[in-house]
Image 1: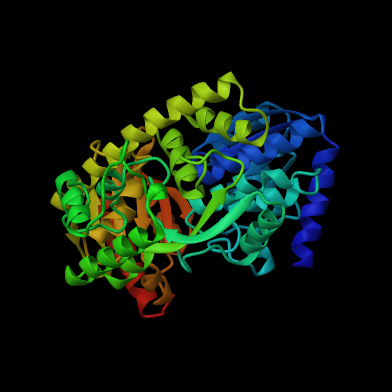
Image 2: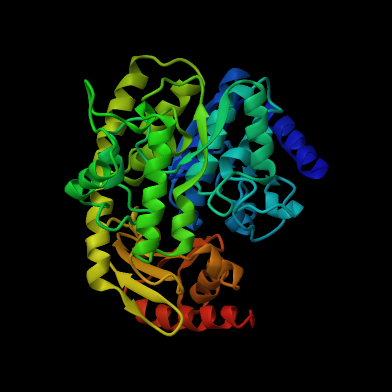
Length: 462
């Protein structure tokens, strides 16, 4: 603990000496919140900054960054390409949580200190450790928690643990965050209860997910009133009504043989942002992160950034426009996920150790990983899912596993790295979720190789 905090202080002092900083960050909820934390911290101490969102780092991207001749703060990425960054001659620091490809005293990465970057510290919370050494930035804690939840760091235990937990408790002390055990579905703050259930796909609720009539009938059957003067949301229900719904959902899932691991995800810790208005997506960390992911997946990271910066400072007219745009994107995002799941059902195939589908151009490369993860509710849970989608750069690979598979030895980041070394391409990520870009036409060879690697991992040979 002392070592990682000392490194955070050292990097903050290096940042403080700069006149201008280029923030380079990732295009997801964790990346957007990381960038917002860095940007807010710099603005408060009078350092000019620009922000650049990128999918991944390669030689061409680094050449463009180097040409700007600025000090660079990489957030939520960079550690997997540390050797390339060093060779590029860029003056930099990194706050990232992905497995590093090399050591550098200019990076803050939990993995270097024996701390898990998958469950104990996200990109946003790693960036916050530097930020808190740049000034009184404790009010950025809620955004850090949103990033950690958006990166599914609470998935393993049903709550945030490790250094993430320390940051949550700091937020509680400052009366910025409240922690509750509650339903973990999207829409608790904003949607009628039946709509919340209809649009829940993780876990898949038999007869309810994607079925408005089924959701309404489920609620009526157990005696839940749907409407008063307006449609009732989850936050409008009594505690007894909430308990009844949770109990009946668990019973339904058990009767319909939904995997136990999926059932466990129904209830867990939720994180309430106390300074945000009740009944908005910004009030609940999980809903907030989903909103940000919707902006990122459709090329509007700047919209997500404006929302985060507004939460960090002043909610002006620009914030309100960005918020409206983000909500429209979110509606589109939920529809695309629902349609993506239908595509998977028709295209899922199995090899000895994996299952896979190829979406082609039918699912966006930016959401195919989300669809793959949600697919566990409808396909086998005992094999990792490998998903392909076409992109202008080649073929996007998204790999997803369950926690049980990881406990058995599966490490998707390692499997992706080894497979890419053999067939070309580049990738990385975590044990439970990883991705890559590979050349078009190499999918069959990639599948054969990763099936072999996963088989060895399950036999503990890697």
